[in-house]
Image: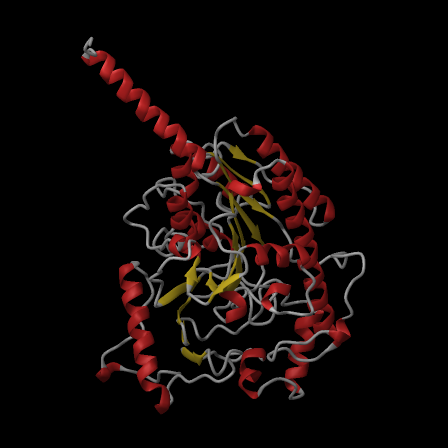
Length: 487
């Protein structure tokens, strides 16, 4: 028998290796991440909210897994999205200022997917990571120092530019189709598709048949006024409009025969612009919807109460693609959870609040410095600038807020919220029992019965702040120097 030469053996081995690479590439899933803008966890039908009509997302949830304890790392768009993209906290990557551009040296998981052969892109609503160039001074700085960071880092970058509303959503879907048309044959893809709904301003045209505000069940911390009901109804209608846009995106996958090999994720980028919502570290501000569908991997109809952080999306996507997670990322892959395997999740998740947009400080709407730790049963909020009065982000001058302040003066809100809604100082620390007080109305900070859990939460938050190189004063002080825990 004729012996095979060394060169021939090498060529044959190389061919086998190349074949294995292509075979592995064929098995890698496409990844679609659909982000809604300003949506809290309760605001989908599949989260047992009967007042919201979201048939497409409800079906999607039934086909995959619903996450009941998903939290973002910030109640604001920019830092939250930066964390989702990078697997790290906004504090650690220098993104606590709303209008900061994502640092060039901070790698994103779509870039890692791109290096591994994925066709990658972002489309739809402004992706918020190129900084605020609305002013001439900012724009010149970004251009001079090349601080606008997303273009050039991915294969496809498009922003929808039409005014908020139905036409805007049409533009988003058109960009989505354009992206899918551009994916090279045989390549897996990644796309983050962003909608503007249900972000303010509400246009009152969310759906053809608007819901009746009088029939809504209000959250426990909402005063029952005509203006508040109308505002919440308009928000719910825009959630329904977002659901229709999401349905079109999923239908496009089906139409192109891509659904069976696509890991599809739906998530809110931060909480609703409602009372104690966006801009705050209460549940309405950081607790968001998260749904995942992956045919053949994720068992349909599942739900989990495991704590999930926005930092975890990137590591999960990388592992699903067969890639390693960078060692300095603090996010944790929940791929085992998707596969129905044993999962050692988070004991606690963390979030921060900093500047919002480019407004100067005057209330918490424009600026705040606060941190939070959330466990499976409790939460501690650290208000470093407790002196700043609460004002809601996005509607502090609107009728719904004005009617809230008026109703508060008339004794129509829970007593614990009177200081909160009338411009008084906030507590330095807030501790809530999320099991027995899910509406966060009874602050346990400083109370004897909560001494142990308060210390436990402060210790966990302090450790996180040290490891993340946080610039705020640490929450624990020596006993001899300690001031009132609740201020």
